[in-house]
Image 1 (cartoon, rainbow, N blue to C red):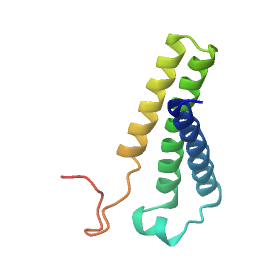
Image 2 (image 1 turned 180 degrees about the vertical axis):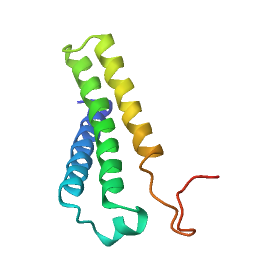
Image 3 (image 1 turned 45 degrees about the vertical axis):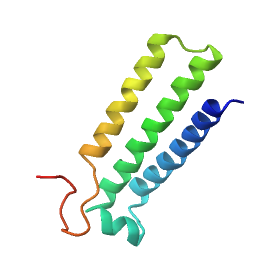
Image 4 (image 1 turned 90 degrees about the vertical axis):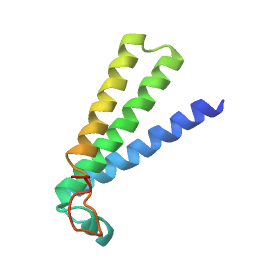
Length: 108
C-alpha cells in the first residue's frame, strides 16, 4: 500500500468518526464543555462535525472508488464537488465562535 492510499483510508476513517460524533450530538444534544465553549448551540456543533465528516468521507470514497475502478471520472468529480459543498457549509454556516471575543470567528 502506497502512502497516498493509506492517507485516503485514514481520511475515510476520520470522516466516519466525525460524522458519527456529529450525528450523536444532533440526536442527543449533549455536549462536552469543550464543545459548549466553542459553539453557541449543540445543533451548530453537530452540523459542523457532520459536514466536515461527510466531506472527508466523500473525498475518501471518491478516491478509493476511482483507484479500484468502480467509479469513472464524472462520479469522482461529483463526489469531490459535494465534499467541497459540505465543507463550505460547515465552515461558513456552522463555524465555531471566537473564544476571546465571544463572537463568531469571522473577520468583520
